[in-house]
Length: 431
Length: 93
Image 1: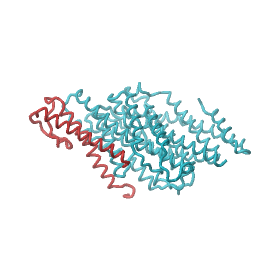
Image 2 (image 1 turned 180 degrees about the horizontal axis):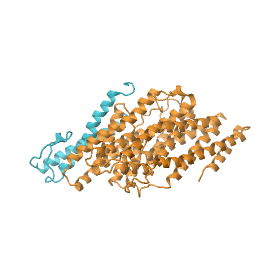
Image 3 (image 1 turned 180 degrees about the vertical axis):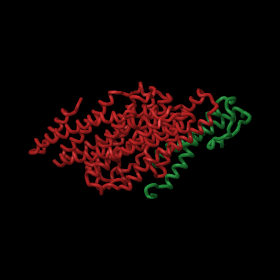
Image 4 (image 1 turned 30 degrees about the horizontal axis):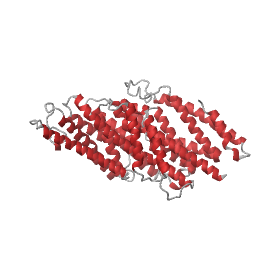
């Protein structure tokens, strides 16, 4: 029985890690491709396809996996499969919510937040290394955009100055190529860095579950699965985030796009080289802002930027709360039932957010429409957030009540807990 | 405070980031400029790129030399990209 429980838990962690990998892909497409789409250097579908291929290639490029998640941020001894599962659900939920609102936010910070939350729920404050949280997450989140704004502003200013008296049509053709090249490098770096995070989680889960020996490398199917899910996510295109990055912050031309993407690629690669890792999302967003700051006469929508910064500040606590709630739910029900309940909450929440996104869909056809400031997801963030929160809360309450009922009913025979619970869950999920 | 912020690493990222992240776009812009019609463009010294300020207009250079200088600019940019990919592939992140 214990073996079965462990196997089901392991399988669900692997599936959830791949789901996180998938959201990571579509959430971050905009980091590389938003500017190329906004300046029409690439057609929207071509841009996401190119980015998907490069993410796929990037995932295979290097396998120097750190088999620890949230290293130096939580005590690695307290990481169990249950903690990882709850943390992943926290990360995915925050990724989906910020996608709905069209806010670029760091996928890795969301994951760290979820794990920190579930560790807090599992063992309390002693499991979290707060200095690590500050120095590896909070402070870099503040510094990354500042550095990127500075570098991109300087680059844009120089480029604008050098090409000042050239006719725009002759420059834009050249700069589009430069833009596509630099954006490709950002995509490649994303595939290499971020796909490895999911690989690391799955490897960790496999080791913890005893499926592979402790000194095992990453099995090939894990590399293939992570690379594929990230590429699929990227190809789906997080159009809502792409729209905010490409149109919402700055009206961008191909010179600014080239300067911004080069700044992103340079700062991302150099920061990891110097051991001062910065989030791809924060750097990319800062670079796009910087390309507006450095361009004489360009208008920067600081209001939109401020909302993003607020969301970045919320990432850790928000993902953490979801992670903690999931851990408690899992722990309260216990066993397979608890794991399945958490997984079901994840599916329900994802569906609710997807349904909410259909109210004002953003896709390849309208991603480049004029930014009117009214009715944009980011601008109406508070309103949209409330709507989703109401939906998700109702959903979660229903799930918890139903799960408890099912668990009570099956209290006599725990062996049968999984099946009735699953059945109840499916009915509880809104179409 | 210094245990929360690694100031030396931060400084390195800032300086190298400014050199590479702003210098390469400037070089690329210079290449584009050198390749466009000489009438529109006053030539700039190649070394003038990073500072980018007024290297005043001089007599238009021969096309061959301009082309060579432009290729040099693009070559440096391409080489930097290659270094970036090599860095990724070598797992240096």
